[in-house]
Amino acid sequence: MRKSLPYIAGLSLILIVLNACAPQKPALQHIQDAGVLHVLTRNAATTYFTGPNGAEGFEYDLVKAFANHLGVSLKISTEDNLNNMLAKVQGGDVDFAAAGLTVTAEREKILKFSTSYQSITQQLVYNRSIPRPKNMGDAVEGMMEVIANSSHVEKLNELKEKHPRLSWDENKDAGTTELLMLVAENVIDFTIADSNEVLLTRRFHPTLGVAFNISKPQQLAWAFSKTGDNSLYLEANKFLAAYKKSGELAQLIKRHYEHATKYQYAGTPTYLAHVRYRLPRYQESFEHAAEVNDLDWQLLAAIAYQESHWNPRAVSPTGVRGIMMLTNATARELGVEDRTVPEQSIQGGAQYISELYEKFSSELDDKDRLWFTLASYNVGFGHLKDARLITKNNGGNPDKWVDVKESLPLLQRKRWYKKTRYGYARGSEPVKYVENIRSYYDILHWHLAKENQQTEKMAYVSPAL
View 1 (cartoon, rainbow, N blue to C red):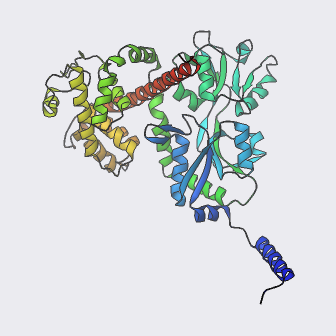
View 2 (cartoon, rainbow, N blue to C red):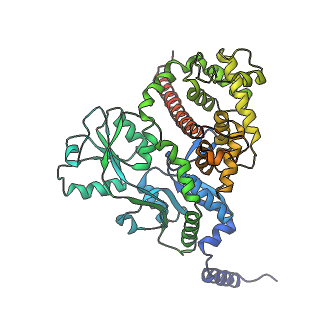
View 3 (cartoon, rainbow, N blue to C red):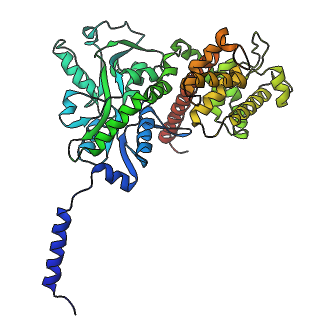
């Protein structure tokens, strides 16, 4: 028998009311049931970017660890406009934002912040071609641009009470990297940037200088909406506290920043000059050798620069020669007939790097496996093995470069090396070696990407022939 229309309408209304009255799932349970954590961030060296090997960045690695902790996959969205970002978090468009956000009193009025995971300071950045400002009073005559709606604007508004003539423009389109580039190119006189971003970016622009800090240390944290339940927020705090207590947070910070703290900025102009005038002679050889040996050619070029500054006639005091600085014994094993011939040296070096890489377990983190490979190229696989054993015996993690690089210098001390299989080694050298290569690679990758953008722009504006 067919039910009457009023009966069906009434039943539908009851179901709607019952559904509305049903208890909503806590945010954490909803994420775990769906199997996806949706995080908002921004494109920057300190947060998230796509590198040659996929997603990278400090914030990305941290939220990836949190997603793994929850047993869910990670979905990343980006938003570079801070106003839009905060609005999306408030509106519940994402689960939270992990974007290097500073905790400020103004932001706490509209958002709730997790436990802090990093401390930074705000810095006034200038071009070293002009006298270094000693205080904000020295900066009032210059042109300053900062990111619109940022914590930098909040701080400048505070400082304006003491320096009424202080003025700045808020840029809604540019990020910190672009503003620092404008200072480096003397388009603007000053900008304000967080210390962690300045640290990574100064390697690309040696003319940049830090005048002084304009803030006390400030805390970075994840930002959550104030609406809804606290289940995800509380779990994030629990995770961050445990991650910090375990030492993994400190390791992650070291992994992303320590190599930049030890980079010698004065060498960047020379390096960039060699990129322009020396690298083109050997780029094809790097590309070919990298393809044959399944390597990144820019990484191979960075290794070669650390070895020889791309000088095929380079000779070390210990007798290694050529662009890749191969020993006689290694060259023979690799079938290299003449170490001083660039193509042979590059091919031999690439093959040796590939062979060393395969000696390390594929279960290692890709980055740690790579740093171990580079250290082995410098100091030898046996010594690296000794350093990993020392790390384990000292309670560190022998599978993590940030722990093993603390043990490598111990190979110079008799107390330690006499207990090892391979004995004494200049263990401080591979640490510096890896750090330099990481910076050379970053600068080369940045420079070539910038050149490609300029070429594409010229091609776009050029009239068709």
